Image 1 (cartoon, chains in turn blue, yellow):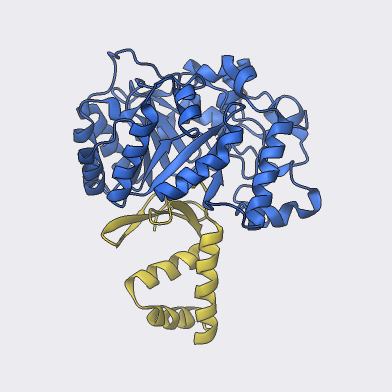
Image 2 (tube, chains in turn cyan, red):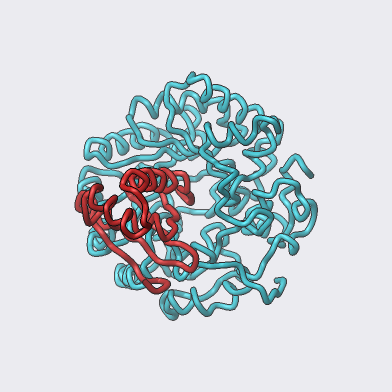
Length: 372
Length: 91
């Protein structure tokens, strides 16, 4: 990793902590970026360990803990874990595939004041079951979402956009309207975990992405959508990533980004032309076995492991980890390839975690960008 | 406030946290499911708005900044808009 004396400004503590409760999952999505599986796991954190993580987040004044996995609701002790949350001041969100949501879980989520439940849904029945590899699962997921909505819990549908389901997105919006969910998030496919070997089959080409993005933008402008609260969430955390920036006509770009996608280029919150990755700047992540990483997208990269929650204090890792310190020293000048001198000052290229999974080097430019 | 210190308040029974950082304050609003950056004035405006009525906030701000009540009202309104515009990290 490149050494640099100058550090980017990092916060006194993480704003958000990604916390994976398990790596197990009953779904078999071919492009799972966590590489979750159905096998039993021996080194999963216990409820006692999980409480320790929550205690440390509270002590650090973390604002948001994002509970995820694997499928967190697959844990037999999940009710116990959820019930712990009400003791703490930080907000919490839950990521789930929705399959295991029961009335009991929904009730406990209400008591714990959960901020939002993100449910993965990659399309209507025909496509969802093909992607997750579990027949008859679609109705269970829908029923799970209905249980949450009956308890007035905020729900977001998370749609991973691929070659397989891009033509079904507007069907998903009809489902979102019917279920009265609060938000639909579109995630361009993250090329990490199992997705690395599936890129050819699933990742959209730039041209396909551009068509999808421009059509959606046009429909948003003309108010021609059955469901309107839609966010696009590129994995790379740039203030305005190439996916959102380059497809738009240069003359109208600033206006469209502000009005349609709520990205105000005049008020960029990171210095333009800087390195935008927020890993170890405002977030960190804890994997199912307690390993601490700078970000969720970097989980499993051995050289980016900064400790383990069973042995290390989160506060000490945040303030004293060499791995974190090196990441904070990165600048755009350290990038390899075209991203280094790109004319879009609001983007600093690929997600470093993703770049590492793809090429073994987290500073490599994003090969999917049209500027390549 | 020192860096890392927090100001906590409740909205609809739910705790909200504002944390002091080097150049700004950072807040997560769970109702809006978004994180905000606040400058010093915005933080003071927010703090006053929570603890007092908007009228008292206007009066306090007008006195502190030596401006008219009307201007203080406009500043509060602008701050609230800026708070929304600065929404980020919402995912």
